[in-house]
Image (cartoon, rainbow, N blue to C red; front, side):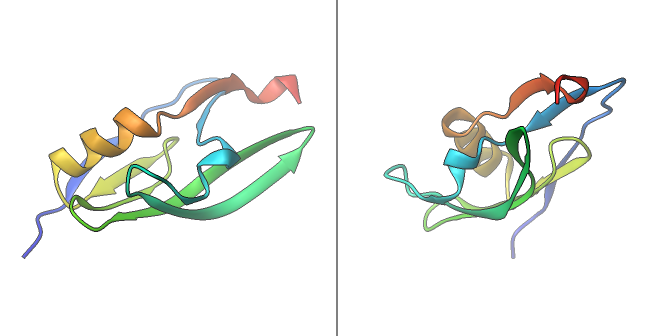
Length: 91
């Protein structure tokens, strides 16, 4: 049975922490990432679901909470698919 690993993000102000839309799809590192691309001058992904055949799953929203089947899964995911930081007021 997998244990859920959880990270809460307490984002203040107008700063956004999101995935780049280029993250959506299947990657050579083994991660398959799904999510809705938002478009308002700038493109980004809030909620996502990612799976890896060896490491497990990572899902959530970097502006709220991200879950993972293990800390190792989260670390491997973030090593390859680090979220972008930008300002919502720039759009």
